[in-house]
Image (cartoon, rainbow, N blue to C red; front, side, top):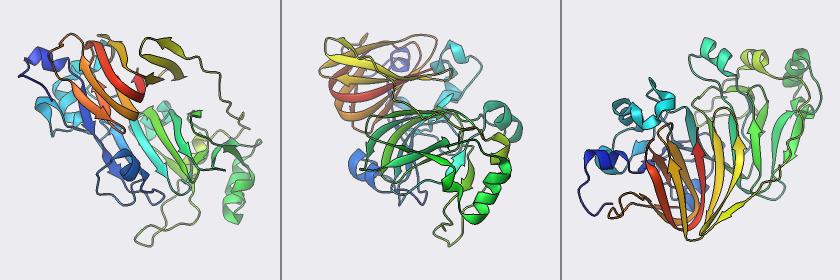
Length: 335
């Protein structure tokens, strides 16, 4: 990947290419393998955790001297790569995924940080979805259509009428959805998304269509905990906000989502895109389309990293100016 041996300091400032861990949840499909080049063993391939230090699925480094090591192990050795904002920490505050919903996901809810830290010893889950593709007529569940009570939810689970209370939202390519903790939700059949979330794997499953897994067993539900954290008020229907595209020679960029945990920008690269990674925090690039070369602009003799559709790169804090050359589309995530 490089034209010469790198000094320790120079290597610290280089982009890091990652390989994901796969998840074979029963609702998954094959699009991540067929369209995004995910050469993983799981069948079906429901999710790929592209940038993760979570113990349930850390990503693997596939570039540089730490090739083959888990990203969690590497950041334990080099916590400074997270940036000064995360001094004293050695794990990512976020988790980035691709999700292929070949079938409806379960109706579920996530707790906030306070509840999750007390009950589950990990963070809660605030998340955003960027829709990469959606079949005609695809929908997702986003909150309740009107105010409900815990009793109504329990009764609806008994008689199969929960769907009567849920708000169904049409989905199309390029949509963005921000999901706060406490919002009951479900990604619908035929939706392919990129998800950026807090570093958590806490999900309370409310309803799963009475499906069984490969062993003939129903997946467990978590109704009691779900009702403790669930927002039972009517949810405002999510609207697609007007997005302002900022143009510069060789690229264009827009903000998709900004919250207290992360910001996500979409970047269209026609020839070249440059960004800065400061000492305060790392950044992540997730390639959605095309092929690009990514390198630290301070080291022009370095060949950089070739990245194609589906690839994910961590940019350690203090990289300075990073040059992306080629043509395609990517998400830029920073905290």
